[in-house]
Length: 361
Image 1 (cartoon, helix red, strand yellow):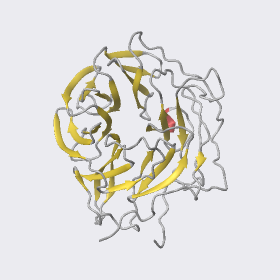
Image 2: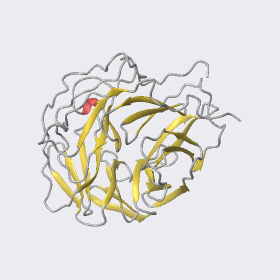
Image 3: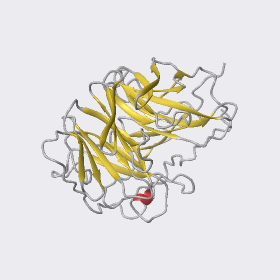
Image 4: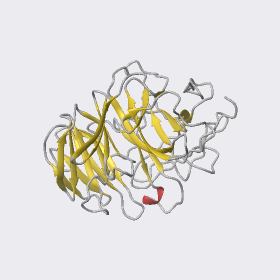
């Protein structure tokens, strides 16, 4: 394709390593004391508005849900129940616009909304819940997008289902070249809702669902998009989506193209964004958290060096990806959080998705 469009996030450059922001050594280890007998940690979510201190919610295999503030204090919202598989901290009710709700998905297919430290709603949607994300559709304020182990994606409010779709193989999807033979099941591994301009330039909400078959399916109002309905590559996009895989590769979806960005030396199980100003007075872009937390591990801040016998089995790694003016991706170490590694830039010789992944008909 002539005039290949570049992503707004920086593209790779094999000849030049990333430039760190500040000191990339461990600043301070954050140790949060959690209540006893809550079970092994199985899910984590964050909330970090620029105007207040960040908070963390934790779910366990024993069904406990705990809210932890930046001061170290904790509140138990649920003591026992089915194993919590995923968590989200966003507004999902209309209780208080200044306080986030906590949404949990468990192994029995239940979605529970906690508001003001109490259960606001609880509903059974489908199979065990594997992914939860906020819905970007402005006509469905405070709604959620939920994925399950059977490959079903559901959009819902706290007390109402809006639509439900079964993801089919090879239907309107961008393909990530798989480096793992284990990813061959239809389960939804991640969901994301974002707004992109359609072919007429109208900002439209889409749902992206990643599956265990290395597909990213794109849904419009619950319907898979048809081949040929994508916008022209020359149309500027105001939104981008980042995706990661088990081999540690990060991709950026821009203008419906899946473009390689960087790779990190960890399996990527989740990606979160936190404003840099929530932890530091340094100006800068949002911080991308590559979530590699393993069950039973807490706190989140350790070096995680493989040759260190005292290192824990899991860790969270934070990467700051400069969005506009810096020529290279950067790494930042934030106080109170964790050690970070230096990302490895994806080489141009690496097997990558096609630059024109959709054939026009």
